[in-house]
Image (cartoon, rainbow, N blue to C red; front, side):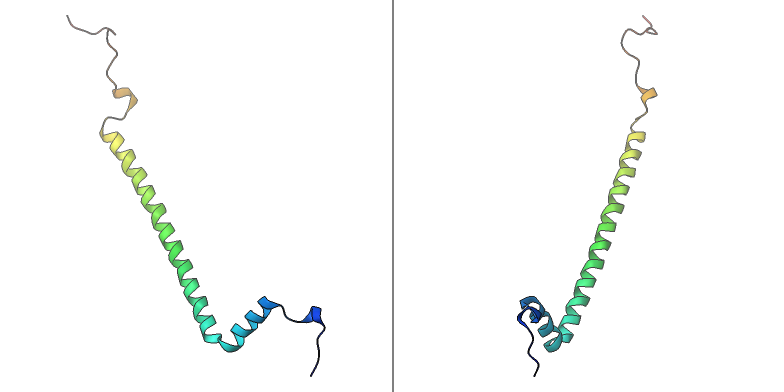
Length: 85
């Protein structure tokens, strides 16, 4: 058996990693697949939220035009002539 110096011995985190790979390889792979699926799901949900906000912007712009949102459609100010007495 070969003895390693103290500074070459695996640290606590390295021991945990080696134990996971050696004793539980299937569980480690399964956790990786689950995390990957969760990441894809988050991307899809974020994309849908962006699309909804774009549709809301378009709907708000369309509502402004239907309500006479043009600046030129404003009534003339009071006393600006054109009043038929």
